[in-house]
Length: 358
Image (tube, rainbow, N blue to C red; front, side, top):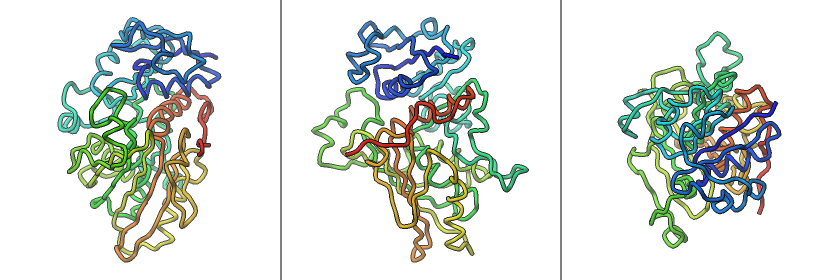
């Protein structure tokens, strides 16, 4: 079966990456691409690397244009998806790459985003551990089970899913203390979108590193707490995280270094086993051998999250270093991986574990 697809926000980075991956998907027909200020212009003018889609013209983003497809991807700025999702009830599958349908807590939405709150959808991080208290203690449940057959998917925030995948195994196994997490991320500017901003100009970011959203203000914090609470089976109030992103001069990529205290009485073997057991057999989330740590270059263009684990007994903390491509595993790849699961297709269809080098 071939599914017809519309992609909104197609002139932006996230929309362009969704299109790049979908263009290689054998079960997908990209029928419609939409934008706001760029409507009426050729897609190729804004995405010159998408040569196979040169025949498409950007249309206005409206419910009328988006309706009538099997699948709609919304790659819009935060706070803009909700105005369309309510009007797309007849579309069999809608995937939102924005934040509008990620948070289960209205209070968290009001505190970090503001504006109208919309119902949460199935979270698009298939490998994330969830609900460890269920009746299968030897077969932990993962978020992919909640994606099977769903009609509405909230793709993750790139920083949020990176940190959540980094720490969920330790939280779920009870081998780390989730009340004192520290995460510092080196991130590329493509995560901020394509809109012209002075602080993202090449002359402003080349040769420097710039922290932003310092002091617990980043919007991905409640998403991380929500995900780790699902992994632990506890309330999000028990998840405390100091989260600091740092903008660095690489166009795409995230390198997240996260630390947390080791729980009392836990051995080194138990620590490493928590991560090995969680991701054994996973295609796109891979724990590296002991003593090895990832680089962002290793995941460029790939749908992989590579994880390195260190045990610091002097500080009694575990250190987890995770690398992802923020536009692939952090956004578009996660969305398409989740789409494949929802449709009953092979999970890795149109997705790659191999990066681009040099």
